[in-house]
Structures are given as C-alpha cells and as structure tokens.
Length: 88
Image 1 (tube, rainbow, N blue to C red):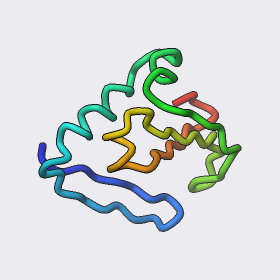
Image 2 (cartoon, rainbow, N blue to C red):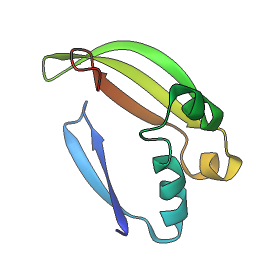
Image 3 (tube, rainbow, N blue to C red):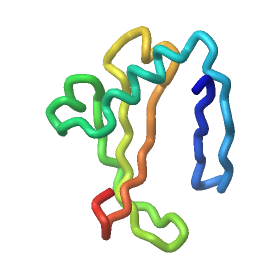
C-alpha cells in the first residue's frame, strides 16, 4: 500500500505514515526481510543491542542501519525485537 505502520514497544504505540515519494525506500528496506544473514550484512550495518523485555517476553534487540546513502538519508536506523524463545 501507500502507508507503513511503525510500532514503538516502549511507548506501546503504533503510528501510520503515508509513504508518498518514500515508497521505493520502504520497498528497498523490506527486501532484507526473509534474506540470509550474509545478504542482510550486504545491505545493513547490524548491531546487537542486548536483551529487552517486551510484555514479559525476553527479546534480542538488533539495530539495522542502511548502507545505501539514499536510504540512510530517509531512515536513520531500524530496530527489530526478536522473541528469544521462538527465534523470530
């Protein structure tokens, strides 16, 4: 679609953003989802930030910073929480 939803677990808030001209950027960032670790490292600088509890579940926190300059100009970083028990 033409919108993206960003969830902020610390604030327990989801915000919807209209993509407009950034639609191609979001498609670029989404290409990393479902890719191998090697492919992700080609597109992003990835750092492990430790473990954080979200709604009582222990989650590993990874921060992805786009290597592509035009993507980085629009998105500073992407933080993803992976539930430790499931691996997702």
